[in-house]
Length: 602
Ligand SMILES: [Zn+2]
Image (cartoon, rainbow, N blue to C red; front, side, top):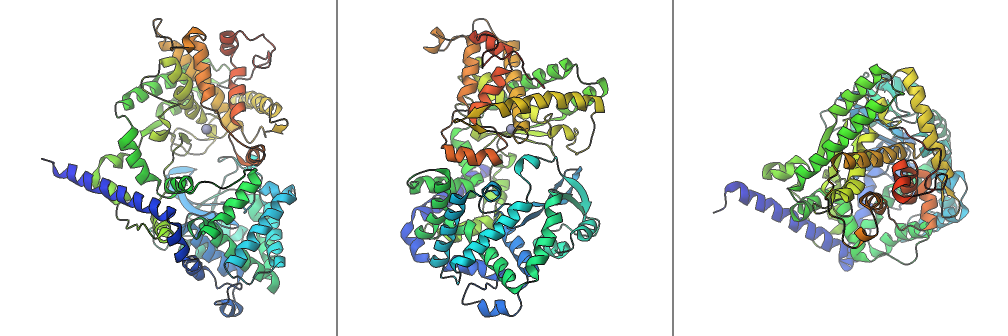
């Protein structure tokens, strides 16, 4: 007979399964979505207004809408629907200068197109956006002319022009320490306290003058207030901002509405990325369920595919990668002793998160975290809104979290081609081993090095060691800038620096860790074993994890914002820097994959 906990476990699993099925079915049910129409979305965004472009609220708008009101309501709305807000992002999370407490975080946000599309005036993309916005205005019956749409795009251009490019704003590098009082003095055009009080009205977090603020992108905010003041001084410009906030509120929710509406953002993205045709609805719906209801899906994924026995095997792999990094710290002649000792302390303090959150194992906690949803197979939009209000997304990626000094390997990555219990060690080390080494190295890359063993952002390296580190990392930045893919696509060495340091360290640690435990009688792979040595297969397994299919257009877009270099470079860089690779494959010294001048940080 089943114990109470087992049946409670079965109950919550059944509930998750039925909600997931309902969400997926509601997404696929195009006739129900058509029938629900666009009114639910218009109703949802109505309280963010009143909107000048909606007949129902145009009069209320005329009665005295201000940009300050609009920004306040739109910040609250975006936070509730986990959307990218217009203008700026405001939220509360861990204080990166003191990880034992929380702080307000403030940073620039994004525009509908990428910053580069405006700054480099990519007219084809701008024209595609104009077409999409006109389509949107027509579909929703908005009072918005073609000129109004052009004005929205010009406003986005102004925002893009004061925004910092991604290569300048990586990680916590630009983050400054401030307080609410200081923020209000520095940037008085927005009443930060009242925005925060509204945003946090359901939370116990108290806002005072001394509340710490982690301020990102200071130069953006220095230019934002003059822009907002200029816009506020003119009735036509004020109406423009009102139109813009309406579009920004509607836009991210389009994918959950009628078939005609959800094709608008899809069509725009596809045009910009050079993709033809449309995505199959079932694929969109699988991605959507994963994106908005990821943790329940993750729970079922873990139940079906994560092998609990692999937990200890992964822990042993992590142990061996930690030992390899420890050896690398001991070898780093460029570090002074005091800095090295602290670095060893930080390495020892790294916390590991493997597989899935602890609460997956406990029916009561599981119910508290993921239970209680009432999703219906014929109400897609309502389902999404219900989930957005309550949930956070599951991460499928491995990651290093600087503020927690923790590395995480969710069940999603502990699968082929990264990991399988049956893999011989040389395959495991080349694939998941390099990922583990990569995440560890992040703690000591150009951004992670600013965080101490408790995750606090502070300078704990000596000046001499910093100078030597900068020389080694410059080498990497220059090396990656010299790579081109697809003819002439070049990355920004600064944008991809942290990831490249981590890739280089990761593969090197994986190779060393493999060599430490290598057994002479380890079987060769069938087939490949006749042609490739174990060392060669380790590098092949590494390269295989970075296979990808991408259009040239998407690649050009991505390299301006993605801190990860394209897959090809993630292979070229690290192998070219390892003499062991040149030896394994017999590459002539001075050839492309085995250059004489190699870069090495860790
Ligand atoms: Zn990374």
